Image (tube, rainbow, N blue to C red):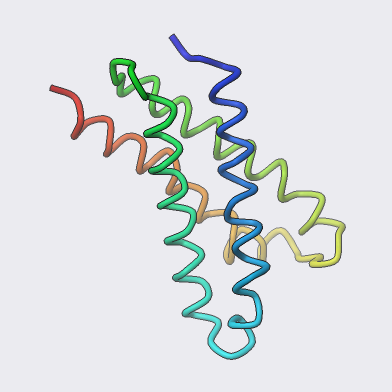
Length: 121
């Protein structure tokens, strides 16, 4: 059974934490864009791992539930990014957005699947 409120709150954090870190690391993008991209991928992955740990705290781990929560977080990240990257100060084409940022969010459900399968007894 998915805990929708917990999943939604943590999903918001799965977007907010990397977003804040990206502002801190943004000057690095001009100097070394590949390093910036790699660091942001790691931030998204580590944030997802920590938040999945919080989501399943004191609960049995379900692979299906983990994947559904990861997919929800993927959707929330895309929805929260849309105003910023579609119309906001960092306006990007859809192709640029998905090739630079959007596809990276697939790491959330992918990590959730792998972690839940490993943690399952």
